[in-house]
Image (cartoon, rainbow, N blue to C red; front, side):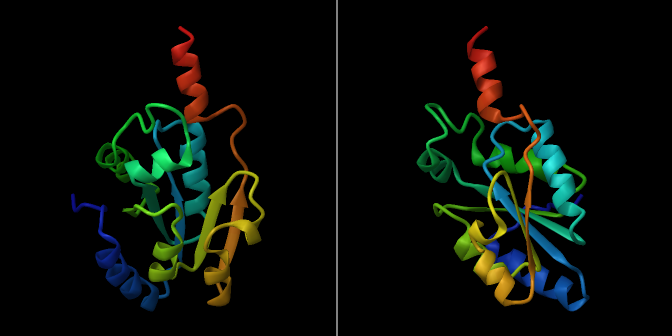
Amino acid sequence: MKSKILSPKALKKTLTKLQKQKKKVVFTNGCFDILHRGHVTYLAQAKARGDILVVAVNSDASVKKLGKGQGRPVNNLKDRMAVIEALGCVDFVTSFNEDTPLKLITLLQPNVLVKGGDWKPEQIVGSKVVLASGGKVFSLPFVKGKSSTGILKQIQSL
């Protein structure tokens, strides 16, 4: 099987070809430290918004800056990307080292931007870039009670 993990530059080249074929590219991002039902549900809902789902994973340094907690990420970038790559709904995986994926969104120019949680679409990083090019932005609800932090707290309490 051909790897779906691409550098941002290689991914841009691939997505440009796909968009010329009228494929709708959906972009989302996250840490995806400990994959759980909430992640899988969210990614499937993101994929349903278009033809091609691109998932950008925060680098290890980026996760540490987010303040997710001591010892995070639990899984390194290479492992987190491999797990995301294995999901059937995911077409491509890349990573970013910055605090936000704005630079990557600007490079890739997706047709649809999706983020989970309580974000209003206009507050989502990259929304102005996507909307300015005629794209759409969606905020999808979290699956209640499902989070990597919650799983870690449960494990630590055993």
